[in-house]
Amino acid sequence: MSIIAIITARGGSKRIPKKNIKEFMGKPMLAYAIDAALNSNLFDEVMVSTDDNEIALTAKKYGASVPFKRSDKTSSDFATTFDVIDEVVGEYKKLGKSFDTICCIYPCVPFLKAQTLKDAYKKMSGHDAIMPVCKFSVPIEWALNLDKDGVIHMADKEKCNMRSQDLTPKYFDVGMFYFCKADKIYENRSMWPNDTLSYVIDELECQDIDTIEDWKMAELKYKVLNNV
Image (tube, rainbow, N blue to C red; front, top):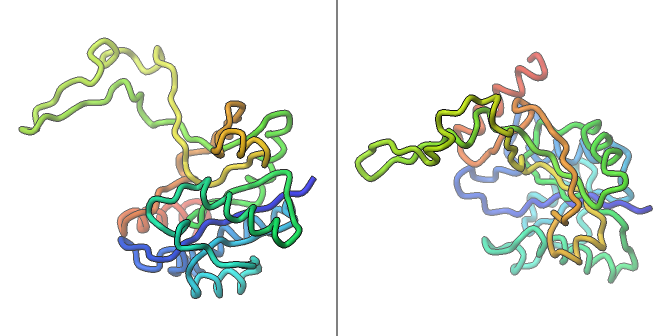
């Protein structure tokens, strides 16, 4: 069984310049994804897919391989994760390498631990894929709509006043990593085939990092989790 970790890290971040290699709590953001993948000892190959020379240099410095550059097509704002994975798989085939399982890891995951990857991969046994999810902190049935004047309207009048314990918990994709059998990715053209298992993580261990405010919140969480 051969497994590859593909860390997707294109350049050109606009809201947080050089986000993927910006220093976060002492080292480049990208280094956390690379360290988790390498320290898990799960992968035959840990590579970074990027179009950016500076990101490539950082990736190599922290132990990942960058055997080829990402194309302009898969570096566009319209490219999907599948497009990136498909390109990487195709390029490795040219090098005579193929993999049974693919783990796509996003670059801004400072809370990702090697043990999390190991536990998720072990739990995936017997399934086609696994992905981390987190429970919404409040029921989504309590959502409110605001009209153009800011007046509140219940999104779901029937359920808005129900007790939380009477509602089924809902979860969201935290966007950290996805394990998937390679053949299933191509059957579905997605990292989420029908038989995708959940790996539930705590809200404290996930954070979208799209703005400076997100970045500052991630730093606070990191300090709490690591007692720094």
